[in-house]
Structure formats: C-alpha cells, structure tokens
Amino acid sequence: MKAAIYQGPKQMTIEEIKRPSIGPDQILVQVKASGVCGTDVKTYIRGHRFFEPPCILGHEFAGVVAEVGSEVTDYSPGDRVAVAPYVPCGFCHMCQAGHFELCYDKSGVESGAFTEYIAIPKEVIERGTVRLPTGMSFSAGAMAEPLACVLNGIEDCRLELGDTLLIMGAGPMGLLSAQAALAQGAGKVIISEFNQERLAKAAEIGAIAVDPRKEDLKEVLKRETGGKLAQAVMVCVGFAEAVEEAQQYVAPGGVINMFGGLPKDSKVTIDPGLIHYQQVSLVGSFGFTHIQYRRAVELMANKRIDAERIITHTLPLEEAEKGINLSVEQKALKVMLVNEG
View 1 (cartoon, rainbow, N blue to C red):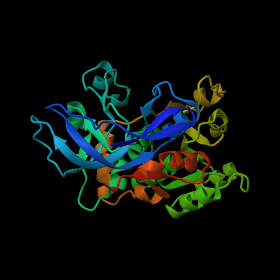
View 2 (view 1 turned 45 degrees about the horizontal axis):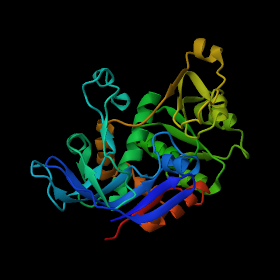
View 3 (view 1 turned 180 degrees about the vertical axis):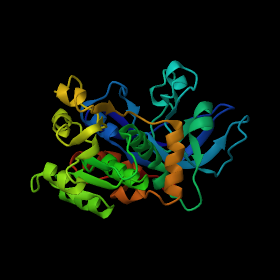
C-alpha cells in the first residue's frame, strides 16, 4: 500500500509499505479521506517531539472497514466510519475527574492517516469509532477530529446564551470555533484576521469579520457589545503577542482561551490586575474527549455545523507534501487528502 512518509523537516516521500495485519480484536480501515492539520504542518517544517522520522503523519481521517478480527461483532466490512486517533482509558485520576483529554494512559492508532490502510485497536473501536450517517461524506467524517477539539475549546470558554465571542485568527480552527459557538447560541462572534480570503469566509459563516489594520478592534467590540467587550476571547493563533493583546478585549469575569499552541519557551506577560480585580480567567484547551468526538459527528449529521465548507483543496494522497506546503504558504485553508481506490 502507498504511504506518505515524513523523513524529517521539509522532507516527505511516497513509498510502498506493507499493509498492516490485524489481531482478533481489531479492524482494518481503508482510509478514504485524511485532513492536513496545523500539527502536521509544524512537524513538517521544524519537527515534533512526538513524531520521530521516518513516520506517517495525519490523525484526522475517515474510511471504510476493510477487515474485521474474529472477535469483533460491532462492525462489518463495508461499514463507513470516522475514527478518533486516540481515546482515554476512563480509569486514571484525570479521567475520573472528567479531564479525559488529559488522560495518563491513552490508547491510539499506531500509524498516521496519510496512507491507505490503518489497523484500529480494540479500545479505539469501542470508544473512538463512529459510523458515518447516511449522506455524510468521508471528508466530513475526517473533520470530526478538529471539530471535537473546537468543541472542547468552546466548552472551556464558558459561554452563556447570547454572549459575545472574539476569535483571533480565521484559520481552520478559528472558523470551526465560530460555527460551533453560533450553533450553541452565542449572540455574536467577532473574528480578527489579516488574510482577506479568510476574512471573507468568516463573514460567510455568520461572524463579524474585522481586519485590525483597517478597523480598531477594541472599538468594534465596544460598538457590538454596548461597551461590555467580549465574554470570551479564543486565541487561535500561535503567537505570544496575541495572548497579550487579547487582554484588552475581554470583559470582567470573562475568559481568555489560549487555544493555539505556542512555540516552546514562549513567554507571555499577563496583567495581574486583570486576573485579580477583573476576575478574568486565563485557560488553555488541548485535544478532545471521546464524547466530544461523537458529538462532532452528530452536529454535522444534523446540519448544525458544516465543517466541509472550510475545505478549499482536495488532493490525492500522492500529493501530501504539496498539500502541506499549500497550508504553510496560506494558499489553502483546509487540505483534504483522498484515496479513490
């Protein structure tokens, strides 16, 4: 089978590798669609401590069950599924406290998704595999993972019905966050972004799109909230300066969510008066839970969120490196790799 092999920073090859075999409690999924995400891009550019080359990247995927082990009874060949790349154990201290995304003993797939077939272990079958509803595409199924991450982030923002959310950055995760917030009853979503194509997409999905080079973002917030500012600010870019800037946009009692990961050794200056006297919470959101993964599929199935609308490029697996570079250069919003076979 074919696979896109990450060989190190800015190096990727397409190779023929051995198709994985499965045990009696596993299934084999033929990957039909896999999304290129920010982690794939960062790994390709500068490496990542979790992905030692040579390896296969990609963790957003959906496909068709090709084989089932002798002990598997819930799935059959031909089933269309979306698969989470990892699931929590359910028993460790973090899981017992409800922080499933911080599980100490996660189980996951052994391979990345930029390939043709993936073996799915028992734990992921039980807690992280979801049948695609009739009419849902494989590309939509592959969007379940990033959407689940967004649902986690929105929950951490502690928004109430009618609240205003400011999102800094209209990349894929920022735009998904806007859709999720609006679907869950946010009064207004304001998105700050420099890229004009991404701003247009933000306006298309119902957000108030602001280019801070052309408009004073704080004045826009005051106008839209009657002077209250944003109840929550999601920083969906990976810059410490953006976190510092966000502090001037949040309302008393509000939340600043560092949703975008920052480079190692980053430093952020925080106004202690904001935290103490204004009772602003600074939080972070990482990953997703198996519950949010299933909810993501349900939200798309019920037409509450159209995650596919942010996909701008669909490429064959053989063009994985091209897709990553399109993302690096911001010539693509979301790239989906597909296997037609």
